[in-house]
Image (cartoon, rainbow, N blue to C red; front, side, top):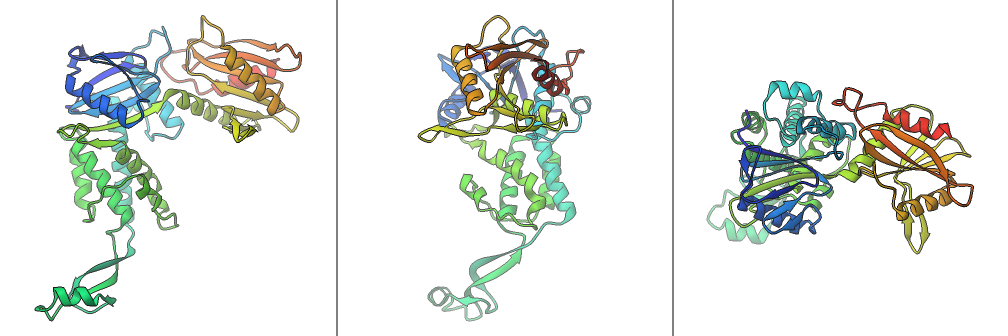
Length: 408
């Protein structure tokens, strides 16, 4: 069982220092660490108040000083509890290929208190175990050191200074062919992070087992630039997924964020972006013979581009525009700015139908309404992401959306 303390909240909720959530106290040390994290990311993750933090559109998981905070998506007044939205978030991440998991239900039955971070760590460990089973690759790299046999290039100045007494040694730069190279050093760093954050957790023993089977490699502190140096070859292709998860773990890990003892990791996703990508995948899964494209760009003034979320091309003459918004619009109207945007999208993509798509507790579409030019139209669509049982995600919403475009 996971011994880490867990707080689950919904987006736009607020945590206040000293108060209990899910039986766990949100302490001042947690607050201070999150403030530092927010400052390091241009204050985009949270809204900071006096001893309180509000979580806007970012969802995901944060672990700091023994406390795990899960921020879950939610449609206003839908009545569903944390467990339903926890499962929905994992499924949305799986569908958009940000996470690989077989069945969430099985994971919950097998282990109690399984949170999002556990699933990412388990995915990473499974990928590294697969690489170990397949056999790790060796690579050539240059090493400069004292050796007992003359090989490579003799570094004469350093040879004289180091080996004036030790005549049997040679200070050389030579090629080495083994498993201690950049790719394995990155994986080794990620394994250390997983080990440090999973102590007392069911994953800790699995991580230590993987580390025992992993070759000894140099300790590095990888950053964004480090990952750009990884070669993309046929030999490194099997490492793609493991390196992708390692990158996520390493770049979102903040040791000693307060120059203290706290170690933090934050895997956070912009819910507006996730909703857009989720709808794109569901549309592409319909297999209707349409070209369904995400984020197409057209420059319209001095390098400034228009980028509708989704462009649907039925044929050479028929194009539809879809823009997704992660907010409940049940009792309001779309903004003037959004409507102007849809009009311009129609104009530039030679489309006469555009739709603003929102999440809701049920499907609702009242047809396309004409703009005053009597040529272009815009519709307001609301889709329930859940099936009729209200707990499983509806994998047919792509078909529903396309049918709305065809009706009018």
